[in-house]
Image (cartoon, rainbow, N blue to C red; front, side, top):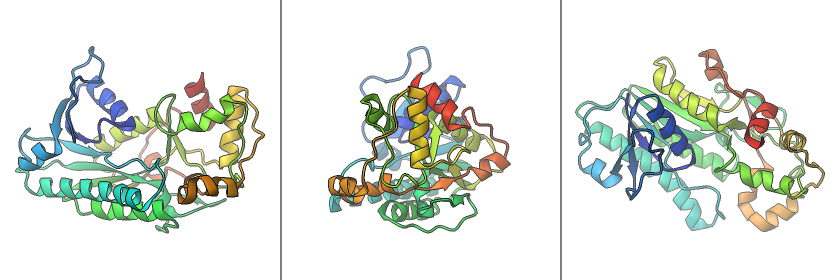
Length: 301
């Protein structure tokens, strides 16, 4: 396949690019600035790079492509000031809008776009487990951001649009997991707040595999929960992490402390969702790490 990857220099994007190149796909990464030296393995063909400006100036510059994966978005791991919240929202909406505009001007547009989204648009849950059939009920800034993100993606004129509702992507390096593990390394791990809030998670290997699955399966479209089929709470996640790393899970972090330190951003850890990847399972996708304990043992071994 010939693929355009928007956001290919990020945490998930780098792993996805490596997987695509490994299976023989041709990858064009759309980026704000071309790297001087490719960060990818010299044993593989390198991806090609194109700036957003170059692609917008001539959408047919690289010829026909089979699909687009859009992972573009300002990091949410920053203090949520008025200006940072605007950047978080606008980066997602503008990227989807630019893709929509370019596809309208392509002489032979691709048949599929896989667009990143987030699991937080379902709202907050305790015991409730969400699948793709549940209504959208955003309950905070991040939830409303994801709703706007999906509304922008819906304007992309493509035969098949997949919206990946992504949870916590766990890997040894990169993403949020190393920060989650840090207190356990220091023997200070424990539940956050009540610990009852859902913590939707997925191993990076499965995250990459399901993106490939979505690209390759023509019957898969619409919202897709990109989470493992093992919904757990924050407290359950911490207990498993403590067990596999042989560290105590005993030091709870009170809600008021996190709110005073992080402000509105504390909703990232004080609230959450339990979710199931119903659509992926119904379409026959097989998870390499369907259970939390085996995923964390692989990441922390």
